[in-house]
Length: 283
Image (cartoon, rainbow, N blue to C red; front, side, top):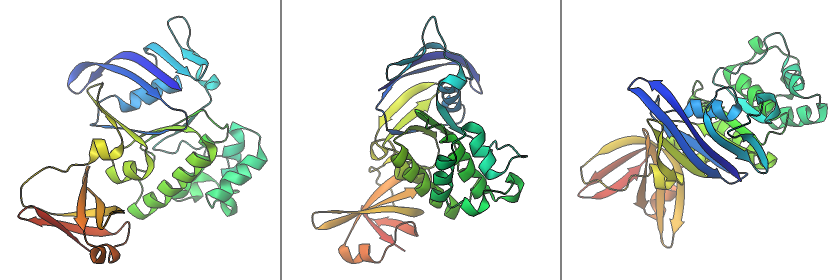
């Protein structure tokens, strides 16, 4: 169990606010932190990593990382941190970037194989694409088998196809290593694919906490509409099929027939339209 109970005064675009977070997280969970810019998401990650101070308590299992009298140094926290800008050492090869964290060639080899980077292990970062750099960053974060993996919008700079590929790799690594993961993201499709729980922040306060469907799914509304979206999943419920579609920053669900479901492919762009309260979905 991870217990977080922290408070910190912040100066945001809307003026002074309190970052006040009280959370209990099961070990091995994948948590998505979402909310508008300036709500305190990245600051919370930095506090957990120990690179920014706050009042309160942080406990990981039986280990106290912070209380009123004590704050554990960042290098002693067994944290893995994946940044937006990769933060790789430019004068080190891919393999050297991993081994800098821990001299474990067996683990480094395994991670590079899982992420299809083995053939690039002798290259310097400036010879890699954005997606390859992000994979190296992820592998490096896992080299010390962290108790907590923190990711700050790690895929925001990548194209949609590469984002989907790396989302799958992140989920595979998360499950294999059993690491508790907290990721900042604004992308509902990314959150739906990866997270088991979503914590929504607004001006430093938790305003919603639940599964991706509970927090992001919008099922009400009577206006006629027609929107483009990404098909995330098709679920069979008794004799009907339900499509989960990401539209902008929201998820919607649409009931459809078996024939309609068979024409669709997960990940494709679809059009959702409604007439007289009866939504339909087409490719």
